Length: 206
Image 1 (cartoon, rainbow, N blue to C red):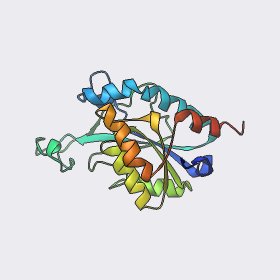
Image 2 (cartoon, rainbow, N blue to C red):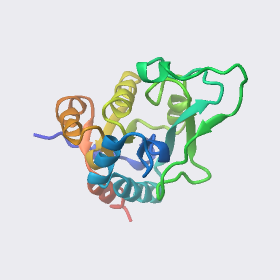
Image 3 (spheres, rainbow, N blue to C red):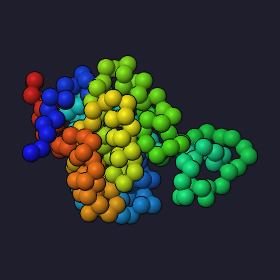
Image 4 (cartoon, rainbow, N blue to C red):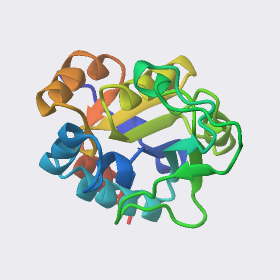
């Protein structure tokens, strides 16, 4: 029998996280075609947009964690993919691909541009921001369940937060693997729900 996430979705105790929903990651020219295919298949961006609208109306804390790179090539994640990046001696600004439309952050919302690690907490101020706002439940959305969403959920649990994952607001590569991760990994860590259920719950007090 599925666990009920609704008792843990009190708006002022929730934080909605939009993870790496950027043009270079999931946009039309993204370099991850399998991931983009699952994003499109699941209508992920449209579902996140609906959830964001409900979250903002209910006063839920909204945060973004974006993939970023230093122009000198330093501090990239120490993984095989990024070990091949060139390091240049001259430092420069951090480069960040924009968040896709229509789920861009509002001017006042909390945005992290993260050049290192593969999840949302390590080396970032996310935990402090969540605790400052009294958040006890994190709602991760975005990509990918292969690494970032799974890793962020594990980090959240390890820091004492609960996690609720709207299954239609995350994607992976390939699509079949998204279902496997939700079924065999994430459901053992987080409450699994969907954008409509959560949005309707947040609108119940209107």
